[in-house]
Amino acid sequence: MSAIRPFNSPLECGLRILFVLNSANGRTADLQRLIAYDYLLVHSGDVDGPDSLHPSVPYQPMSPDHTHKVTVATKDIYEASKAEASKILGRQTDLAAATESLRNRRKLREEEQTDSSAATREIDSRIANVLIPTMREGAQRLEKLISRRIELEAIRNDQDQVSSLRLAKQAIERASANSKGPAKKWEPLPSKLLLTFCKEVEAVLKEWNWKGEGRVDFDESTYDIVIDGQSRRSHGKGFRAILHSAFVLGLLRYCGKNGRPHLGMVLLDSPLTSYKKGNIGDGNQDGPIDPGMESGFWRSLTSFNTNLQLIVLENKEPPKDVAAAVHYEWFAGENALNGERAGYIPV
Image (cartoon, rainbow, N blue to C red; front, side, top):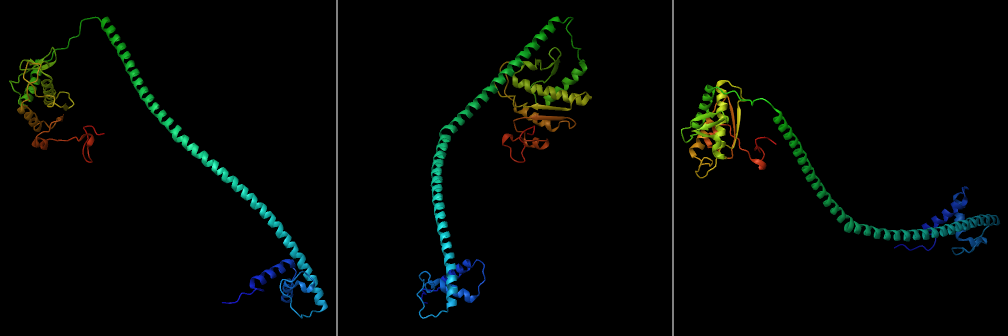
């Protein structure tokens, strides 16, 4: 371990030379002069200056001229050192004042931070306990008001529609009361054409395995068909539905065969579902469905004229051979998966 040097350490020598160069104020000096100045800094007592920093060197001869030069230089260095010391003391005072000011400002900012944190907590508490419940209550009241407004608008629309219908009714009644002349009568339909049409309806009922003779006539007073001497309207709801299907299907086939104007397409909505099982009763009641009639209905679809189009919407499943012979489409409803059809009209 190297010994510690109490004097002339590299740091001490560097600081001394730094002070010497600063006091020179740009004046040039060679190495020998710098060494002399460095010596006088630590041995100022040798030239009648302040007490030396280092112990004096004994028996050192100096010429009068050298002593004079050293004395003048030492005084300059001493004055410069005093000036620098004064500057340092002044800066130290300013630094202390600035430090105190910063401490005061820091204390003030800490107090402001504490007050701001307390205010923030108070605002958060007010938002959570007052504003949010108030907003929720306001939103609920707004929803109720909107719902009530929709109801009132619907009522007002209904009232307007009722008023319009009443005015239309009054206008029709006035026009009917003011009308003159005999009531118009429809021109009677040709008997031959009616007979041909009734034969088509009879053929449809025969294909459907209708129980009974299946004789069909046309009543011109009601413009409806009569089956086996009983009008279609006198049957129950289920029979009326299936006989109506036979009527429109027979009309389609008649127009197709005889070149009469027709769309060439008929849509039947639940013809079999409406024909429900029930107890046999009078003419206004539905009888039990005959399995053969339902089977005949499905079988008739396989031989239907391909130049015409018949669309049947039915909840019941057709037999597999019938489904394979016709264009069968299954509607999956609202739970339809990818690739499945939800309904007749795509959404």
